[in-house]
Amino acid sequence: MIAQYTFDPVTRGATGDIAIALSQVDMFTGVGSRIDLTGATISWTLKASGFSQTKSTAANGGLVLDAASSLVTYPLPPAATQALPLGNLAFGVIATFADGSVLPLLRGILPVQDLP
Image (tube, rainbow, N blue to C red; front, side, top):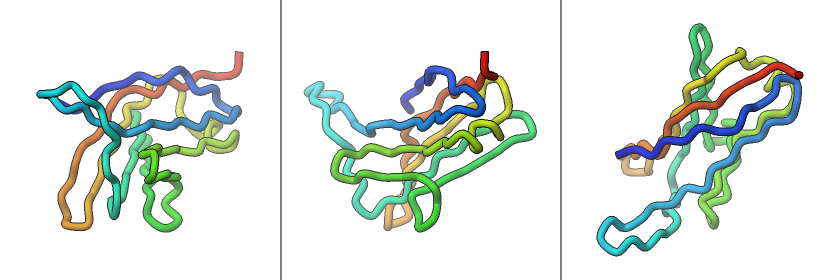
C-alpha cells in the first residue's frame, strides 16, 4: 500500500519548501531503512482543479535529492507559493529507476492558504 501524508499548510507568498525522507519498513522484521535511490529519478506532482505541476530530480527538474539520506525537497520560494491555487492540492511522488521500473512512494494533500 502506498503511504499517505498531509503536510502542514503552505501560505501563499511565503517560502514553503516541503521535504520528505524516503524510507521503507521490512514487513517481517519491522526494521526501517532508507530507500536506495541510486540512479532513480523522483517525480513529484501537485494537482488541483485546473492546476497540475510536476517537478523531478532530472537535470533542471526543480527537485533537490540528497541520495545519501533519501531526502527529497520541493523548493517553494515566495513566487512559487503565490502561484499555487488556494485549497487542498493532491500530490503524488514516484521513483523511476534506470531499468524503467516505477515505484509509487507517497501521496497525500498539501493545503495552501492565503496570508492571514
